[in-house]
Amino acid sequence: MIENLDLSLVDWSRAQFALTAMYHWIFVPLTLGMAFIIAIMETIYVKTNDPAWKKITKFWMTLFGINFAIGVATGIILEFEFGTNWSNYSWFVGDIFGAPLAIEGIMAFFMESTFIAVMFFGWNKVSKKFHLISTWLVAIGSNLSALWILVANGWMQNPVGMKFNPDTARNEMDNFWDVLFSPTAVNKFLHTISSAYILASVFVIGVSAWYILKKTNVVFAKRSIVVAAVFGLLTSLFTVMTGDNSAREIVRDQPMKFAAFEGLYNGSKGAGLVALGIMSTSEGDGTNENMKDFNFKIEIPNMLSYMAYLDGNAFVPGVNDIIKGYTDNDGEVHPPVTEKMEMGRKAIAALKAYKAAKKIDDTVGANEAEKELKANFKYFGYGYFSDPYEVVPPVSISFYSFHIMVGLGMYFILLFVLCLVYIYKGNVVNKKWFLRMAIWSIPLAYLASECGWILAEMGRQPWVIQDLMPTMAAVSSIDSMSVIITFFLFLLVFTGLLIAEIKIMLKQIKIGPNHGGN
Amino acid sequence: MNNVLNRLVKLPKTIWEFYYEGFRNQSKWSRQLWLIILIKLFVMFFILKLLFFPNFLKTKYDSDQERSDYVIDQLTNPKKSIK
Image (cartoon, rainbow over all chains, first blue to last red; front, side):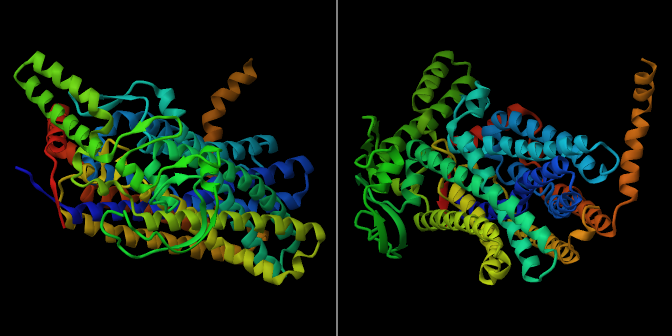
């Protein structure tokens, strides 16, 4: 008998995870990026021996400390949720996540907690060089701890380097290096941390712009802007590069996600890139076949094909092509979703048969079932769907989050260039419109950063593990009311933390650099 | 050689003094931050974790065998979705 699945439980569990992850991500990128900006500033201080640079370093270190202290450990809540709300998923991936998360814990704890103490308590107590090394190690350590989390996330988007054990229903890592160096993990790590550097650069520029507008600490602010703008510009260009690599990797491994964030229902050769568009809100005929995709769009001909395959005439599959099956540019045939669903059902049935055969010590039956499972495991997760269109992610959300992220990314490059031009010309103080724009860019940097994660996580729906486990199969059989209660508890706790962060931060900014660094 | 040994012997004391002095000489806002950190960790580990986030499989089943049987049962008997 088929039991009923409470979709409100799935939706609330997803909402709770999204809430926690998005709040957590408010604190993380500033820590990742500021750590390097501070390290660069302190390096200048050690090289020049100019006490003004020490003052600059100590001030930004204060703001870094506030953000670090309030944000620290907020990510652990995600692990609580794995164990309670997502127990099927946690069990299914357990052995893969164990190693990266254990390394993350050790690195985060030992490296950051040891050297961050030297960073804050060590002025005048340890040598300048040792202090500088500690600052760099905090920067490297915090970024390395992000690496392991992103490796785990990369595996969920593109599961490699493992084999499924039908006795335990767990995936076991059989090649650590495949997991660590999977193109998805590498691109995800580089793109995520470099986008965090942009956010931190915009933050430093925005706060510095406020000082210039207030006509206080102007020299301090100008110097800060120079460091942040150079760092931000270089890392922006790197982010463009990693984003481009990431897109080319996604079109290969997660073509449905790619089609969704490009708003591409019907693929074609020489596909155009929608630079700007308003998606149609019509629901189509339920199959997307005759769906009017855009009400308005500005399209660059052939650009999407070029960006995806470095060939302006290459075929880019759309949502409908992926559902119906298609042959890619390398001649590889991708079966229709209905066929994948059939294979998925066979895999699920084989796992059930394997377990039953094992119970009665039927070795022959177990071997046959295992063979069938192995042959169809690639599409295991498709067995949970009853309609091929269930594999389509929310297209509008993916499209808009992607385009907001990219659009703001381009805007930040312009901001960094203008900063450097005005600083070089010596007229930044007179550019009030620009200084105001710089201040208002701070929330925009957070918006772009959050959009990146919305795209990454919504775009891969309905999967928690690509092709292997859909979201609906990952949840625990718990009461949805308990998830609703904890959702609002988290909302309360995290909002409290965010308010505390903003209040303390603003207070410290008002006090200024003359009293920072304790 | 004696100098190195002496330094090694004194190392724990030096580290202790480093942290002790560091914490003692903190500014008012730093102390406020520590208070926020401690309250946050208390809420997370002693309220949320203990009361609201038990590990579903660990609390419900005693052995890994039972846990894997349960998950296989969940995975091989897909549920029909209801709104």
